[in-house]
Image (cartoon, rainbow, N blue to C red):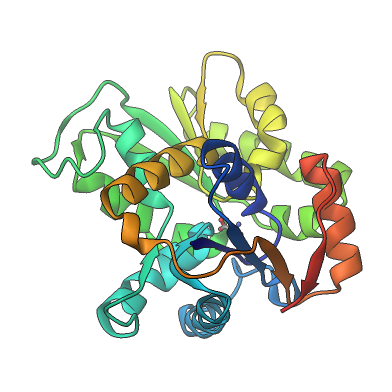
Amino acid sequence: MAVGIFDSGLGGLTVLDAVVKRLPDVPVVYFGDNANAPYGVRDADDVYNLTTNAVERMWDAGCDLVILACNTASAAALRRMQESWIPPNKRVLGVFVPLIEALTERSWGDNSPPREVEVKHVALFATPATVASRAFQRELAFRAIGVDVEAQACGGVVDAIEDGDMILAEALVRSHVDALKRKMPNPEAAILGCTHYPLMQDVFQDALGPDVKVYSQANLVAESLADYLERHPGMTGPGEESMFLTTGDPRKVSDRATQFLRRKITFQSA
Ligand code: DGL
């Protein structure tokens, strides 16, 4: 009864951590495509090919449902996968919708027409590919009207985190927040639209100031997965074992993951 969680690298571990806490009895297969990270500077075809390869590997590991815990893959590849690639007995879900539902005060699957919501000025921090896709703005427009979104492409942050260079990551986050504030001086809310960024959430919050509500995806995605599995109990696949797969160097990736999650994580080669 395994569920798959996919990311280009280590960022999806923020989602995995929340899922394991929310659904402790569900085995989870994590796939980090660390050898090919970051995805945020790749074109859509490239992201699609890498993502479909990874998802196939997770099906082989006994998952029928895979969460793309990667905004870049969700933005650049998910719709194409859903239109023509995913077999009828499998599901692949992205990470945008739970976040946007929270921001627009909707419960799961509320498909009523777009309406005014409390928040009016929203800062979006994401990878260059996610920002270029405008997927966040598109999903938001289905649900809310009158929300001004200013997007900041945060080049370099994912690479720094993948390299374990948290000093560089912090400096980059602060300079991206400054750049955003020059365009939108007083955002009310900030979206961390990349699953790597919760690892820097304190720095985002500090740079943005205490009045900005920072939304990150981990708990929201875990909650909506729990809800989904309650309504579709058959979607946990036959896999019975949790495992961590990587296309990168398993020892290096295990060390970083252990450092981030503060518990022993052991990756094996995908
Ligand atoms: N964690 C991925 C995301 O949510 C990072 C993508 C990348 O590899 O650039 O977008």
